Length: 300
Ligand code: CP
Ligand code: NVA
Image (spheres, helix red, strand yellow):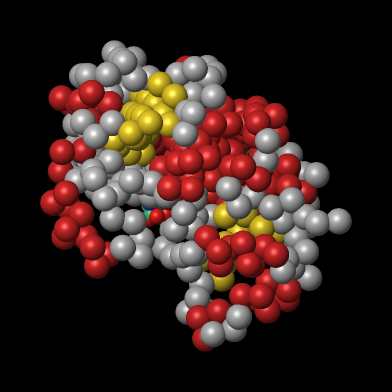
């Protein structure tokens, strides 16, 4: 039987995603009480990082330990991947030794290829195109603070990047309205836009975009792998900074989210990031609980 992978949010259906979010809430409560269910006893997660990470690595590694299993960290420099061993070879070898594999990489096709050769579930720990694990944490954070996201208005500001694409998928699956406010030339991928167009629209003026919005989300202006474009991006994205003036155009009880790491004074001001509407620390902490629920789901 083919394993279930988690390469984009679309890998699972709405009910499955909701069951993961509900289970994450239970696991979160148990973790706070230091009460750990060892549902993944003796199970091993292989984690390959071809890009840097703080949250993704620590949340998966801690999550496996708390569930009674173990995680192995592989970096390009410390493994044969960086010396040119084809990923289809790495995939076939690792999938005989571990129970699931998380891959953080560049081209999404690399992840798909890795998964196509794997006998065990493969999890997208971020690709150039999608970051579905972050959406599990963001959705959990929204549900915990405000209840169902269905019918709500969400605004994405800045780059039409991997996080933006995952928000577009989420809008379609969870039936919310997503407004994208990106500078010209930085729109999301046309294929993702076409597949989500009933739920997603573009509004270039950030002040208009955030009117009556329930959730404001942004991300870095220069993602990993785009460092050469940094100077040009910094200039073009300035009007899209989430600051107090912009948040005042949103609903009074609107939440602010950011997957982190954040660049204060660029995509978000210090005042918003550290302000009362920001739930970014809770959002980051929720990576642990939502991914534990995902790991359980993929094995059971
Ligand atoms: N948000 C997120 O994925 O953070 P890391 O890059 O630190 O893993
Ligand atoms: N868009 C960012 C997300 C980091 C978690 C990047 O890809 O670098």
